[in-house]
Length: 398
Image (tube, rainbow, N blue to C red; front, side):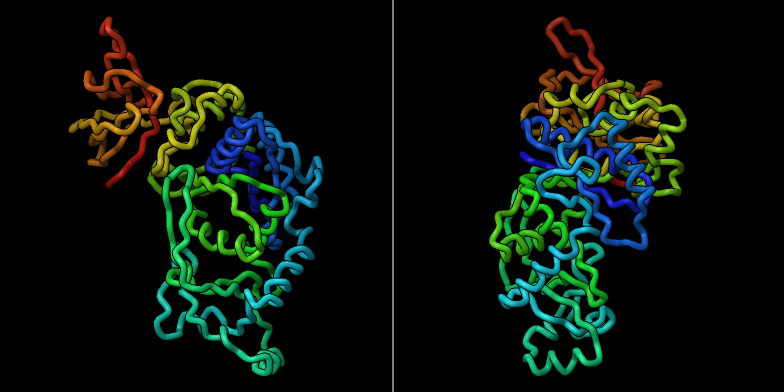
């Protein structure tokens, strides 16, 4: 499956972004497909050439390569969104001409004040009530004299169904959750939804791997693919990476950028090992090259919940030691199990085995902790020799 990684150069690449890049690269390379690197720099005030250079350097440092990109070129150039505005304008105008999109003169505040405008999913703001949907050409011309319009895609009631490779069956009726959505802002900046669909379609991307925080965009993007007469790619949304306090990684968690880790002497195999351990692809403390993970990788075996990954994990300490209690075991598909227990401060955690581990989990010996973190001890063979098995630690309740 031809895949891609599309970072925004607003700062250094952090551990969460690196883990998403690893998943996208592994999926593409496992299928012997091309891998594209695209720079999503639509937000020009926040983006910088320095950040782009740093991100590309960090990805290459980790051992991830790409076949097409802003630095190596390719048949679908340019690979920076800031250089593709003419293409976005072409698509916007086509959608307007075909009646699939319309001009909207409402401000965000006006939409929020409109009666019956509930909030959409995530940070998408209030649902658009359709105020400008049926304006006549004369009304549009009159309003353009005093206000620059945005452009919205026309959304009719319809349930959109798709399969997320990491989460299974999904569905959404965009007309109920978001309504007609913006594809070009009133200031002339093209919306992420339009740009990413045009880019992925033009670059023949077959699989989109990205973080869970973008999953709410999928149904809208499928509608855009349909409006353009193109088939949608496969989608896989990988769990977010959280800090030790259970919140999304940010500067308050310390130096979480790859550049800072490299400056402190962290090796690429140790960082890849830490990221892979958080995905259940190796044991904490392993140092490994991305290509050594190809045979182990599958979306079906990845954890579905957000993963706690302290930056210290690159030193081989991915999971904080604790003395668990109240251990219970729940069988999952394909021989995997989910171990639930109570840790420090009353937090409840889950430790999930991978589907390719076929030990007799009914003979669970213990769940304990040592200098590497939480361990699952099982009788893994007929000789009754205990085997240690580690899996990503996921806090599920305070």
